[in-house]
Image (cartoon, rainbow, N blue to C red; front, side):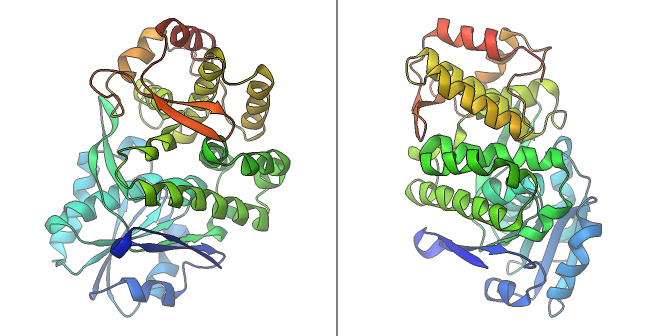
Length: 362
């Protein structure tokens, strides 16, 4: 097992990364301060890992709520099922919520923990690559609205993250690819050595080589933890973590949540961000081709959906939560490993990127 720490003063917390961690009682005990625990999971993950987690928590009052699986259920209606369970089982302010699942479960559980009795503790037990390297770390929790992704939420840090790499062995290839989008993102925004390492090891990652996968998770979390420690609430540098997300969120919103996985949309979105960066004179065509090859090798799309028009993108990008004072803010690349946030993008260049990269089918 490897351990990282997210440095947030008195709210700092560990990230445990390794095999067979879900069943380790000793990892949970220091972070559960009451007798009550509510495990939130979904109907895909529950048959695989719920029993092992409940056994690890046999000394506590453990209740469970099993939600339907899918991004399309990441809404206020489904969120209310968590509150129903908490209130029905009379959970008090010392309860601990445990998110057992992917990014949707982690986001919804974290938001429920932030809101229940004005804030209770929670633990992240992410079971997908995307959630292990991204959504479980950093305290951003939210649900979707029909008009925008993650528009209703709160910052609420977990007490720990337990990333059991064994769960990735049951992960469908499509979900593995979705997680790789966020892994590649870390190399693009701040770690060129990691980016080159990914190029060299992409085939082993897609084969789920345990040691290579553990290294990718560790280095991804290391990169994210550093950014979160500098800017917990996205007032500055943390915004670089949204590379590709403004384009990607537009795709998800237009297609209907769940039609494209979040990582798929981010993969296409990163390609658009890179294309626009090239048009602005920062990246070379060789670097664009290299990224395209890496995304394809990861099983990710490099273009948006065929039925999206330029207007479809623009109308959704202007309601993205990263819009500031009416201006679309984009994360672009000055070079591989150096990202920046800007609202100063020539409209004609943005239109060219959307025309060339945003409207072809994956």
